[in-house]
Image 1 (cartoon, rainbow, N blue to C red):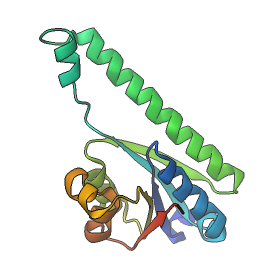
Image 2 (image 1 turned 180 degrees about the vertical axis):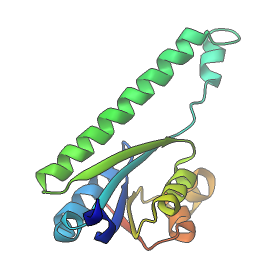
Image 3 (image 1 turned 60 degrees about the vertical axis):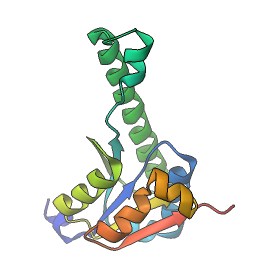
Length: 158
């Protein structure tokens, strides 16, 4: 436990996108020694499920068992994503601790950074243009401006 107090804390925020996978790979290949000597957190946020489509498809209120099934499937996918990322880290000699939260990714990432006293946040960028960012929002842009630590945004080459 004493060893973890001396290590730098680094968080790699991921989702299921190819850009996110690239950011993790890039960080491991280019910052491998730093990450191996750090306490690494692999974080993902599960967006709040939108059950409107379920209600529409069932002509009213969605059955509770259907909602439960959707939530369980989302949880399984999230755990599989984190396990895959942890395995990728392990192949590079990095021991990553996985964690997940439910909510808006941009807010949950910044909250986790503050709560864990993260010293470097690494995340990918979807490379959206200004118009798409205006309508869809940008998790990386939000984190750059609101996270309480330096943020490294990794863009995938075109």
